[in-house]
Image (cartoon, rainbow, N blue to C red; front, top):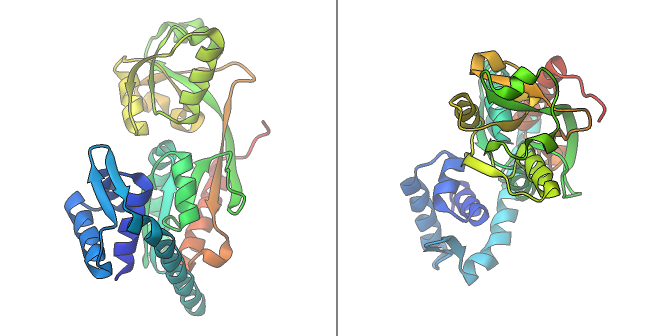
Length: 301
């Protein structure tokens, strides 16, 4: 039984779909399926059943889940202890991140980090904040950059930055020509492009609900890059964090500020505590904090 098999099992149990778990692990679906089959052969019973709606744990799988979680936690703690003895960051580290952070903050950060820590092997996994939080709690993620609030009190949370939400609109849009900040309540008739579950999408839903209308959604996506491209092509407008709009001219859309008092996004670094972090994870955590310090200054709400 290997840690790769256990990690594959935990990812599928968390995601509920082999395809989604495979993307998160950076594996092909066939490669992930082979890991699962090898694990089931090792334990001598079926742990998962595929159904039209996704992968479902069997009774044996439900019973095995907490043991698999503890086994990976024990391996991570042992690896961290050995790395503390050597003092040199090396080996894998898994960072979970929001799509906008992955696309607009991490490329420069990771380029510098891999140059300074060539023996560390980072892996990125993008998802929504609740999924990332659960991944950290289960130990499938070493660190996560996600939006607050964090629900679990057993996790360590470090605020990285606080930023306003803004409106991304196609070039020359009527809202650009207004030349002033707009309120979300003014925009309930607009057609939207969104990433479901993200702060911007929730803010639009709340504004529309207050007006008693349903948002007109042209398209949903799960990546920040696709969101920006769809706005560029005129499919709709989107509420996005300021991070995504920093270099708006290069991305081909206009940015319209929202009025004072509009929702903001607080972004934090989350982990299970120093004792769970390997030397590689601690090095990445410090690099994230330093990079953010150079780029942002936390502002009051």
